[in-house]
Length: 328
Image (cartoon, rainbow, N blue to C red; front, side, top):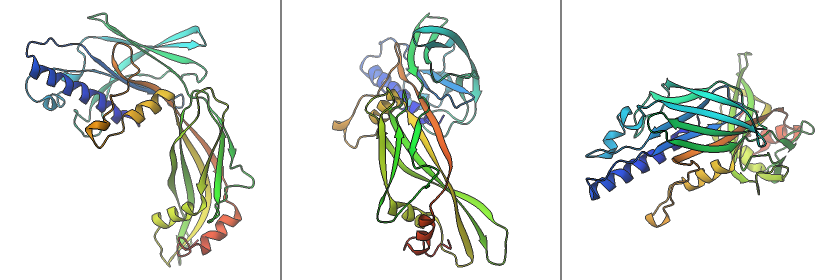
């Protein structure tokens, strides 16, 4: 659900377009425009699809965004995920509607929203065709996505470990995932601390977002990929996020490399949805939905845990100008 906020872009554009059209032709007939948002992730135990419609009414379109009935369908929707292994159909997953109450505040109604879900486990080797049928109009909306597969991290490794040298670069190397296009890496830095006079340790971590727009050439997988992290940035990050206190003693623990990998459609959607500064730079919203608009894509979280820092990194914490006063 992390990317759910991007759904608002489609709905708001559709609502504004229809409202403008009404001002030009008050007799124009309303057209059923289905808006779909869904991102599959085989690591999730629940898979959600958000389905709404564009709306038309007199007055300010933004006022209608506050009314759930403006966006939700009254008609019963049949929502299915058809699973294919290569070209062979294997099964059909029926999604059920439910109300969840975790939508952030914004232009549209909140916090309760209607979504469709399934608890069935999905297979990274398969592709999933989304089929939405409106029981009143028999309208069929479709979309298709491959899942992002697991992949291999080649550097860093358990031995010699994660090495950040202030005046050098640290290479991160991996083999691209089947179905993956866009890569984001967060380095989770674990550490402990205690106060003088109190031997009880407390354990903490900091999440360092190192990159989020590294792309593979294609989604076939097997590509050798590499990104070099400036060693000094590691010490700057700690210096910016920890407070120097002479009464605190800290110890560097392990680190985790947490990747978030998006499919090609998700990458295209995020690029097109970037806000422009001028009207000249405006780009139309990306959509991969047949007979509707929106996004149906996939992403995958994969974590490489319990990597150890080298002794050289731990020693540098004591002398580097950004971290020498942090009690390591």
